[in-house]
Length: 111
Length: 111
DNA sequence: GATAGTACTATCCAATCGGGTAGTAATGGA
DNA sequence: TCCATTACTACCCGATTGGATAGTACTATC
Image 1 (cartoon, each protein chain N blue to C red):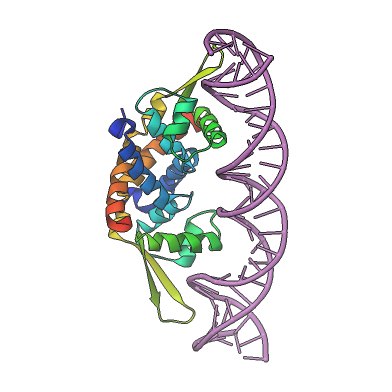
Image 2: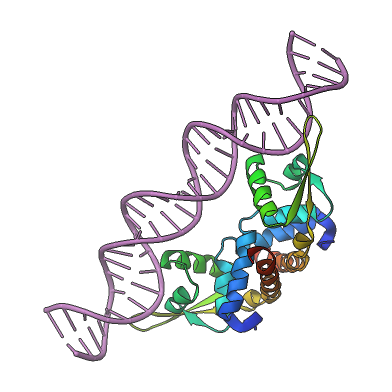
């Protein structure tokens, strides 16, 4: 049986989490950053399929939710480094469980 | 440090998982079903904010991915009961972690 | 003097999402 | 005779998403 058995209060906190993580990109970006700070261009190639525009937008909301840090270096051309915050890193367990489940799901359904 | 440290293969399985669970509704529907089988109408009122049309669509893809069962009773007006499958129930840990993280997130960011 | 380099932003445009409303089937009860 | 009941589906239409393309800032190098 699942956490809280469908209890409305539990549903609320799941809702909060989903709101901060909505879309197919945020968790993948966080995952990419979990191995260390990265620059914009690095992220745009590592997170396969994302466009610059979308990446830019996603990074902004991740920063707003304090899941990542943005550090600008005063150089030309500009250099910006993104890193995961402690709060972002606390998603570790979620990513881990998602990873395991994804493996099982691929084995079972996708084949 | 997070699972697999950004390893591309781990990213793939996370991608698989996200694909099966995309959107703001699927996990909430599964959560509602985690406390026992429910009928369409029950789900549409329990999962606050969802429309019939969207619920219907989401249920279809959840069934396709074998996360829920659909059982039709031969009555008039029709009765349809949805229940979670074993595969769907294996998301328990994901929901649990999401729940905990959502609590922390609300405390930290939403306030 | 042209070009490359980074991290974006702006604009245009197509596709998809999702809400609202209405309709259907077969029966029992007012 | 008429209505309510359930689990949807069909249709219309506005809003949001997201891709492609181009442009900008400043400096160093060719």
